[in-house]
Length: 175
Image 1 (spheres, one colour):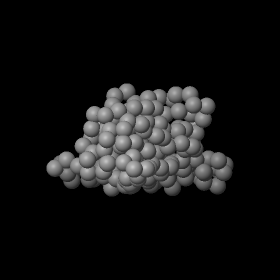
Image 2 (image 1 turned 180 degrees about the horizontal axis):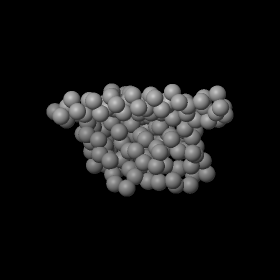
Image 3 (image 1 turned 45 degrees about the vertical axis):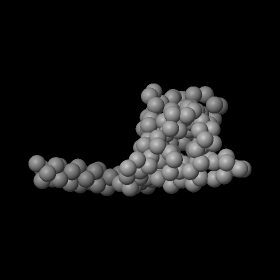
Image 4 (image 1 turned 30 degrees about the vertical axis):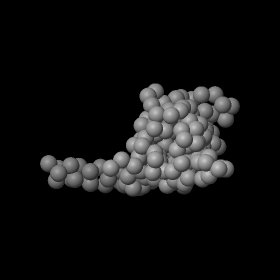
């Protein structure tokens, strides 16, 4: 069975290469070439993030959001700890967008969460979501058991494009 799947995958790859070799790139406009390049870059970014086992938070309407696994806890004054949770947004829509945490809770406590803004159409952006741990009386990354998110994606005029339908829970620091 594995051999059959491998053979089918190889045939699909060869077929894709044969089709792409048939494209006359010289006949395309600069905008068309840039669009092809942007789509290819975004596909490579998605594959690399999945291959590196990054956490996919959502993939909807041409927008994908991944956690990279990188984080930093900052102290904004005595006892006021903030988690900077790094993420990548891939925007394959035709509009400039921003991704906002609509609601977030840490270990069951509602807290403030930030956004990653100004992601151009067809581009990707790495940024960090600010999550105020001090709203939950949490002082370190090790104290985080779970974070539950809901997101909204807005366009340049702050009109809602979509919201995630169900909360997304990510578990941390569990033995």
